[in-house]
Length: 250
Image (cartoon, rainbow, N blue to C red; front, side, top):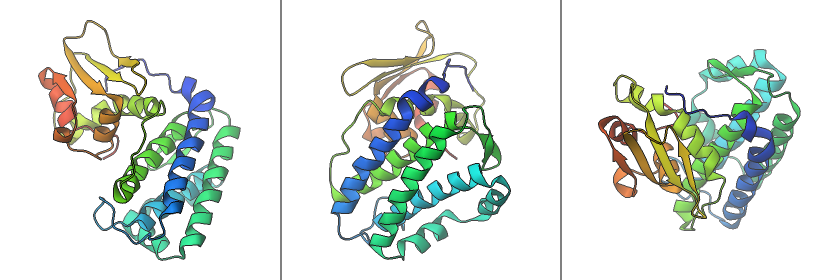
């Protein structure tokens, strides 16, 4: 993975934690206003209920990893589709209440533990420095599926910067997925935020570049839009490969 000088420790507590709460609250308002959680979302086989159940289950796993690391190992064998289906089968109010309580509990837990306190996370280790923006990313991405389903605009905010930063940091995953070697030359990333501010990563004189809106980049990196559905532009073969295979998870 190329070094883009990302310092997530500057983000996690001061900015990303309030943003995580705000993103959850925005999605809550949309989901709670929709009476039919059996409506199918763009994720094949997943309804709105599945999406909320998945977020609730992920929050529960964060708490387990922090509070009882040994028991967390048991969740590694869980099937995400099965867990989401089980949650979606529960009464809507019960699931909504669980998700709300879990969001608040996770935010509190991630806000209290030392930044350098590591805990297990799916075959590796993580800290609050990483998990806060990751929970924001997942809330935003699964929330996008719900916004698309109910046909409500998912209003872009500066919270996208955290997601974009993770998308840049995950550059190597895109090349791994494409079965291509990591680029040896730097790639400049220039993304325009909602207020017109340009967020940049990589050296200014890099020959290869990715440009576009932060929203489009986040949609692409979270696999919520095909490249052809965005206005993202790439200069250079490696930059094009990155966008064609962009992802923040395998």
